[in-house]
Image (cartoon, rainbow, N blue to C red; front, side):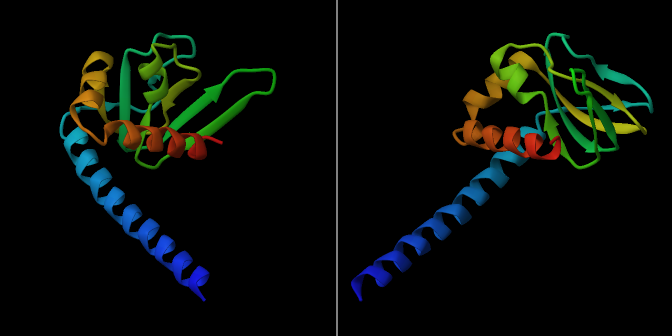
Length: 142
């Protein structure tokens, strides 16, 4: 009888922790997005190309993007949901692993790499928040 009750307590604790983390992420996201510079790009503009040094992180506010991962097996994806782009490359000082261009007029929030890294250190929950956003982007682009 004690084991199921203990399991219920553990599940309740996990549920409470996940709600608290969601609130923390929501606050962190608002602070970070408020720090971005809004930019508009016209349809069919290349934002970056594979191999270009990742100097910026982008947050797609509205619009539709085409991503191309040139490889032996060419992979292209269209994304039209709000998301962060280029976090992993900016964090690691890498080049972009794909090319990105707009399919329609788009609005972005743009973060210069050094400023973005400063924001990561400024907010306590920023690192786990951005790790989650990297995962979200990987799911969208797969």
